[in-house]
Length: 107
Image (cartoon, rainbow, N blue to C red; front, side, top):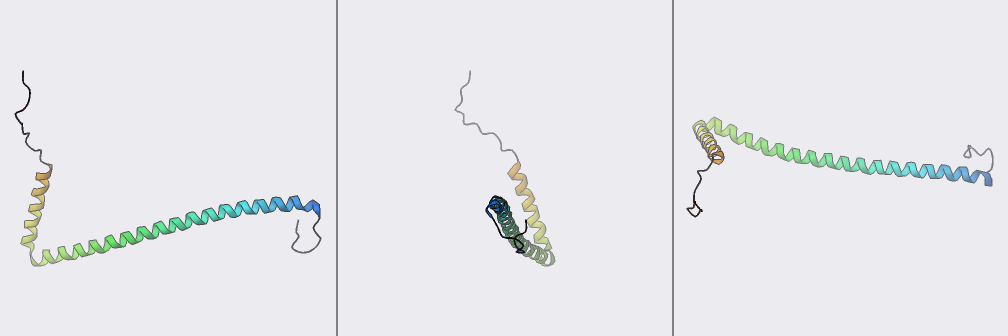
């Protein structure tokens, strides 16, 4: 039924059809609003992730610049530092010797 072109006037029998169409449009509108909210949240999440990634990128770029400077001007110190790092990693994961307190029961 087309009412917008003005061909015929509405009557009481048209009300249930119009009400059903209005309910259908209201439901569709609700679904679209929900999708829009989800999309806005997704966009916000993506933007926040982008900002975090950019901050990490800048930090890494700074670290890379420092490393290049050290490699260029003090390669011997870089080797010394890397050996210290390697040794500390080994020490961190090396099993500690078992220490006995001497306060244990024996048979």
